[in-house]
Length: 100
Image (cartoon, rainbow, N blue to C red; front, side, top):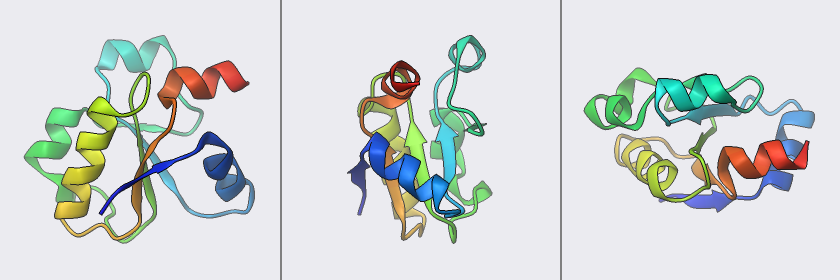
């Protein structure tokens, strides 16, 4: 099961040292244009093809541009593969960057 993770929650988890992995699921061009600091880039198609390539035993938060859509699909695929702490970022990368 996945859930929407607020930007405030993600910031608090990172500040507390939670080993959350932020996964940007957009295209390479979108990622290069701007992304969340420390995020790894794994396009949605790659996650759908093989979600087990990611650390399913760690907390995961997926992000796309606006939140929902691609990031929710990626979180769902990761949960189906066995991730137990997975969510998608509310407001996405654009919301995160607007906050900084």
